[in-house]
Image 1 (cartoon, chains in turn yellow, red):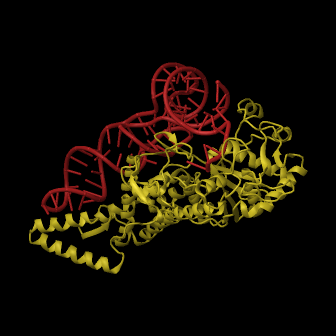
Image 2 (cartoon, chains in turn orange, brown):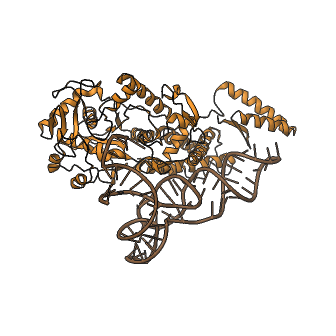
Image 3 (tube, chains in turn purple, blue):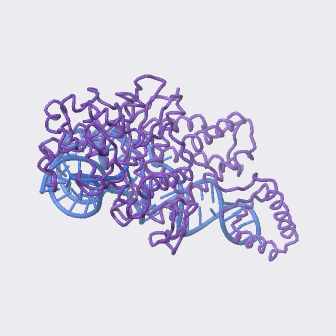
Length: 509
RNA sequence: GGUCCUGUGGCCGAGUGGCUAGGCUCAGCUCUGCAAAAGCUGCUACAGCGGUUCGAAUCCGCUCGGGACCUCCA
């Protein structure tokens, strides 16, 4: 009824018709954050993108098991497999237990996801909670001949794997190309091949985060957790795996190799990768100094240097942020993100955010008007066609910008009916309401932040009183009084809108 | 250096062979005590050069610009 869903698959670099392995069940795995620092806006962009993918699959009636991991161990600092665990390092620097670091940033992550109105995943497994599964997987890989031990660490033999498998199946790169263009890294004596990566890493006694294994005390390699946990919860081959496109050449390449070596089956049917968020055309990343934290974006101010906790509710704010002219609400940011397709780079700028803020308010105003529209015996616009266009857009690889364009067509209809330029039947109005609610709230996951018109009883009755006094003043041509009321309300964040049917108001904050 | 992606109107941003995307800005009009809101109208673009085609922003080639990955990164 809603047509076929097409998904751009990184493996084929083409849009393919989505066919689940075991309908109506769908397995969806997304690489989650490493909780050693705050999530920045670029991370949020990816998770927002997969939130609408999850929501739309759910809307289509699929029973989705959405797994998004928390990486709380095994992610190395530096550019080789001999560095320090990022969480251990942060714990040492902040003089905290590693699990305190993990807890602190996990709580912050959840709070931000909540502000952006993301649905929680079905399962949110942690790497440290699945050490034994990872050890079992390493054993399997060694047994299949693709892993080898060296001084208490275990490495994956990429060249051997490549003889029978396409190691670069997802990156599109050949082994020769990768061998030629890989830097020589220090301290790799333990590895047989320069592309080999760590499955298990031996830890020195002073290392805080370490676990016993058949190869001695150590901790798992970064790529292993996703293979182990996706296999455990979604099976050896599952439907969709997602993540940022910067994960393709290393993390996902190695993840596929491990899974194939262990399970002898391709792990994933559809790979979805989101593009990067840029600032002035350059990727926002943790290593560059151009990142913006959600709490900074919401307030327009910089996080104070001595802010103890990075959860938005506990943050201490300092001066105005150099990249921000003002603060933008979470839903404005979410709307801004969804106005670009997930596969395109999204460039951050104040003017683009401001444009989205106004557009989003216009959309919300139209939704607020829906309940006040008068119906007649004829509809002048094709509402059914609008619904069809919305589904067509979502089915075309989750094209949220086009869905939004359709919702603005709906906005135009609502406003025209409200102005008396167009008419709508009761049945079509019901359909129009359904379209707005389904796509704006349910699928795009937006919510109305402003409380205007019909909201709480007390502010509503107070506002009606004030607006009646203003109307009286206007009737008596006491315009200095009516304008004073309007201007003072504006200062308080309340915008009054005079229409043919009287005056309405909205709180803009 | 290698691999890949990309260049759309004042700004953001869809669109992969023919049919006005959309948002924001700006100008005019309608409505209005004025303003705002809303509606209508206008500004009608596809980096440059060449090729394929009846027809290209869309396919191919070259040139120029931007970016990503190759090292931790969503």
